Length: 248
Figure 1 (spheres, rainbow, N blue to C red):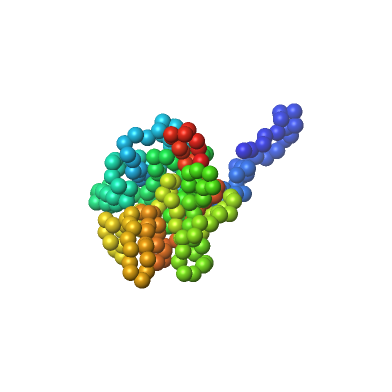
Figure 2: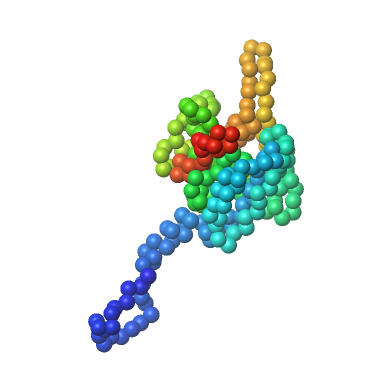
């Protein structure tokens, strides 16, 4: 913004085209933070049982980056959740155009960002991490944050931890309700192709019961390969209970 003098204050002067703008001092910092000049092409995928609450859909109308390729949601309907994610990502990687996108945003049928700039904030953390998720809690009284494990604590663990308010908290695992992922991570041949996610529960003698939801199964393998993850507490995500009409 240029502040102009009032006509009553005009004085004879020589005018040259060197007026400075209000944003000149921080334009580079602002563009770097917002990343609007970068490739933010994003595919949105969502596993669903087939019916999604209207409140959730209405709140998916988050602010999207201008002049960027955003495609989706792509719905994987009536599949077991791990199979749904595997099939959705496999379809993307085998598509001649979709495979060129940079990011995948996973959303689930009972999650939505509380504020419309949720996706824009997630992009900010992608310089340092391979997946950044918004912060949401398990449903019910005494719920816990979907942020698991401290990378600085060994051995590898998925103990629930409290994210630092208004910051990104490094972690070993996340839920998948509102996560931004680097697509190239799923092209890593060290993963078994098409089996990135798995829901499992089995018993091994002298070891005990080993149980995983599809998300932590993936994160355990990915952390072992050197990938890094974080929970962004600046992006609160609602966990919607349709039966009781409660936003957890």
